[in-house]
Length: 247
View 1 (cartoon, one colour):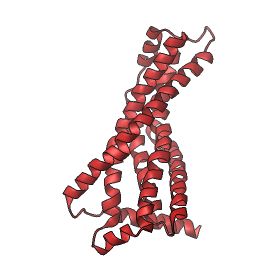
View 2: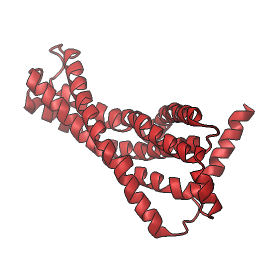
View 3: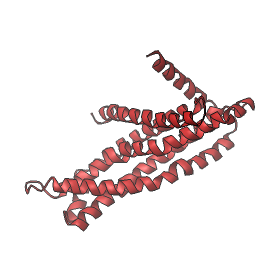
View 4: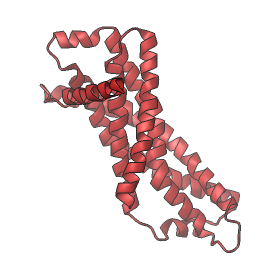
């Protein structure tokens, strides 16, 4: 328990150091643009691929579980739409990014720590936590909502394609289901969750890497901890935010 509270206190002190006032804004701007590409743009492919197949699977499973003639066919499109918007595009995508982006951040920062690059920055008077991590946080907060929107569009498209090609639903019924009783707030809800999840993934992963003590084995363990802790917090905050935003 004492170790847990110590780590929590250390994490918040770490955040205070990260959000210290930047010395040279131009350098931070260049770093942020670089991180937008590496952490954001390079993640769009995997999100699009998984969203496409998730949409297809949701559509087919919904179709096979609503074969009762009492259920209208458009429920298949409605189910695909709500599943993609409410959960996949934010929560499931965040868990995927925790594995891809989180481990990348933790191993990058951890390697810099064990090779004493961070110590060299500190000796030169640079706030290493802010310089290395703040651009990553800003980049993920800016680009992860874009990834969420990509996931929604591609996921619904995958559901439509799977449904029409397999013949379980007509294009007209699927499109009607997508439009039926649509609540625009669901997209806002998904984007709000995405911002929280982006901050959790980046800050937790950077924290684990920043305080690595040892060698390459410890860097690997830190990357594993980053993914595990980020995933747990994502699921926890998913419950909390759902209760707060949809109740």
